[in-house]
Figure 1 (tube, rainbow, N blue to C red):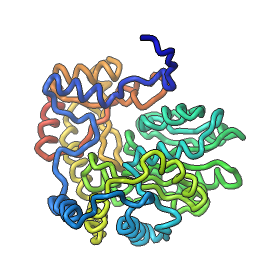
Figure 2 (figure 1 turned 90 degrees about the horizontal axis):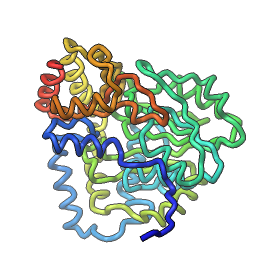
Figure 3 (figure 1 turned 135 degrees about the vertical axis):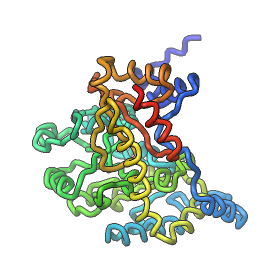
Figure 4 (figure 1 turned 60 degrees about the vertical axis):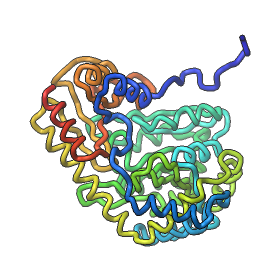
Length: 382
């Protein structure tokens, strides 16, 4: 039957994550493609969910989020960043980080608006912008350092520029923008009406004695920013889909207009469980060292391989260059690794709008040490 349906996203197909996971499953390959842990979350947190359910927290949570969880987030920003956040006027609990990103873009982007993104970029940014009629203006960053030329960014800004999206720490590059970089961005935006969406879901996974950074620490950025974060990466619970958005009152007011008709409210017992679990904020401070150990295990284990290891300053992804092994395009090489060597990764080219082959693969190291040891053994034989 012909419904005369015109696709709003004609260029969007199956995501690379689904493709590689499906291929991995079909060939019983070790799956280091999708960004999720293969180890369980803390059993105490699971018990707290049961406790919350038994206490009767099974109905709709408030649209803006459970007070207990919002208070816990406010405490986190105070103790980690020395930043004050108003739990009522500036903070909204969302169904994961991606829903918060979608809602922020839906809130401010209109047809013909331009949105600057930095590639390689998380795959939900561009389609969401296009869904609301916006034009994506990509800034292509290249391996191995993925450095941002802020002078070049300035040349892209004009009266149509509505929003800039950053991801810090960055998935898939593992790069971290330090305070000096954020100050440069703040100076660039000062005196303009351009808004900022800062995706900070990996904020507490930074390495080599670096400290977490947030645009909330930069006054010129905070006044114009949607800051998105998530508990999925923080608590090893990517399937729970609990996130949040911090923004100035005016932006939060508009954000909630969209949020209430999109999701309205988020899983109640899990909100109460997370709030109680985070009463001890030391858990957050220990997260970086936990994942740094896993990064080091994978990185050091591959030093004798034919892969070249790219720098990894944060997140739980390590990028590896295979130019010393093959001339194949990234997707084809990733597929051959999966089918022939039984290990699945993600081609970095999947995170660019235009074809960009740098012979680089993204590897997830949020895995059991046993899983990483198996991965190292396979990759060292290639």
